[in-house]
Image (cartoon, rainbow, N blue to C red; front, side, top):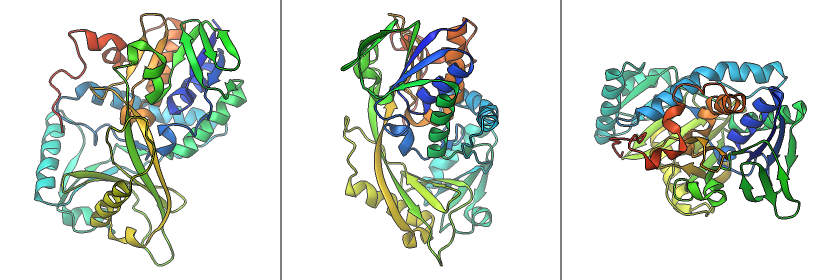
Length: 377
C-alpha cells in the first residue's frame, strides 16, 4: 500500500530511505535545510569497513555492518540502473601499524578476527609495502579484502537526484517539532503524514525526547588533498593506520584526491576545524604515506557524527510511533542499505533485516544491551 511518508534529515540515511521508499511507491517528503551537504555524510571518508572496524565486545555492530555490506552491491546496481553512479570501489582495506605498541594492538584485532572466522591476513611491513609501494616504515599490517569504500559525495548527489527523479518532494526547512503523524517547520506549520521517519543524525536528540540522551554529536575533522605533478599517486586501497596509538585513515578518490581523517572527540555542536586536529592528521599520515607532504591541501572540514553509547544505531519505533533511523556514528554510509531496507519493512509490515533487532531504540532501558561486555579501545 502507498503511504505518505515524511523523512526528517537528508544525509546518507535520509536520502537512502527517501529514494528506496519513493521507488517502492510511497509518497515521500524530505525535510532538511541543506539536503546532502549539511551533515556528517558530506564530510565522511566513505569507508565500508565492518571487519577493519571490529573490536572484541562489539559483535552486534559487526553483524549489522556485515549484513549491510552484503547488500551494498545490489544497492549500487539499483542506483546505476536509474542512471547514477555512487563510486563504489572493489579495492580492499589495509590496516597498518607504525610502531611496536601499534603492532601489538593490531595483533589483538588479528587474533580476534581469526577467532570469529573473518577474512583478514596479518603480514609484515615489507609484505605490506609490496601491496602499496608508497607506504612508509610501517611495522606490520592486516589485509582485509572484503572491506571496500565509496565516494561519499558522489553517493549523496546520486541519491538526491535519484529520489527527486522518482518524485520525492524536498522541503528546505528545519523541523521544529514532530510526531508519529505530523512534521512542523517554523514557517510552513504542521503537515500530516501516515509515517514519520527520523533520520536527522546528530540532531536527532534535539527533535525527540527519547533520543535526547541516547544520540550525541561526536566531532570529526577531515582533510582533502590532491596529488601534484611529480608526486606518487594516492594509494589504491583504503589505508587505516594506528600511529603511536592515534588512528588515521587515507581513502583515495578517482580524481587523484585523497580523504584524510580520524579525529574524534566530544565538542557539542561545534564544527570549527582545530589547528591541532589538522597537525595530528598530517603528522600521522606522513608517517604512513610520506609522499602526502607534497600534496596540495584543498579542504579542511569538520562534521558531527551521530554517536550512540554502544556504536549501534537506533532503528525502530519510538514510544509515540515515530520511526527512528539514527545514531549510526562512523557507519552511516556502510549502514545505508540495511537501514533503508528496514524502513521499507516497517512501512509494509514485513520482518526487518537480520541484525536490526539488536538496534531497537528501547535497548538502553532493557537488560539486553547491544554492547554487553564492550571493551573500550
